[in-house]
Image 1 (cartoon, helix red, strand yellow):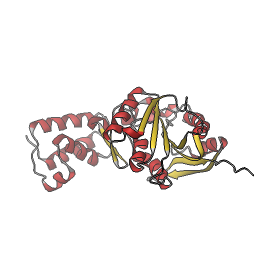
Image 2 (tube, helix red, strand yellow; image 1 turned 90 degrees about the vertical axis):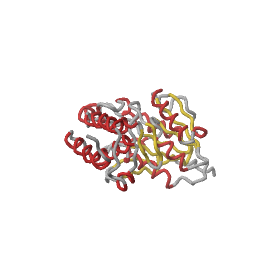
Image 3 (tube, helix red, strand yellow; image 1 turned 120 degrees about the vertical axis):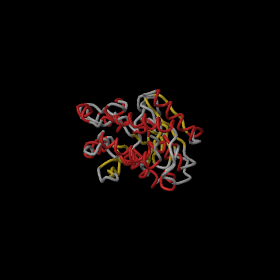
Image 4 (cartoon, one colour; image 1 turned 180 degrees about the vertical axis):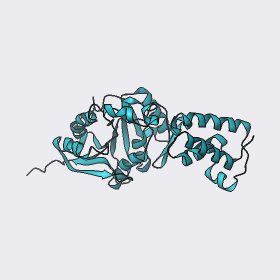
Length: 289
């Protein structure tokens, strides 16, 4: 039996609900749009448009994969973040709205035409770095990741967004090999989930996202112990930093950065009103008498 757009959306929603998928309405719409090569406007203005046999078969495949809890971003190979669209693979974390808190904070005090040098540690898909560079045309950025596969995704995203000329990507272990006082801004979304918590996560995360980008050691703080002093080392005097944290890590991560010498350390909350980003700056050089 052939389906039209509105029937396909209803069927998709019902199938995902039955599979226990969170947010089945939005996921169903996204999968129908992709399978039927339609837009949200098409579903509203031309709801009775029939799907071809090929489109219907594609939708059935998408729904079977989503019902097995494969993320929509992996099924479609893309995910919107901030104001850009990113290619996504199982080699990188799926960009999430929570992480946009980093971008929002950074852009507040980042003059539009400032030629800042930005460092993104654990760049992954390039979500944070490329969102910033897309908004600040005079800035340049370096993304570092230990995963060559993740760097390949970031490289493709930079090229697709026309940002390859202002984006350098390097395989490395955090700040290893980077010079002192080299950057105006450092951002990072490091692994921060405690090892024993990994198996309790939703299947979309536990079974489909790179463990390397999730697991932060016994208490989830291993990366921050390394990053706090190293971020302060590579920042220029007066330079700023912003790192994503787990919702219950505010006090511990703030303390690590203060111990490393950071100034004006604050924690920002995300749209769900949870602690999400620790930010601050490196003290400017004292003026000589």
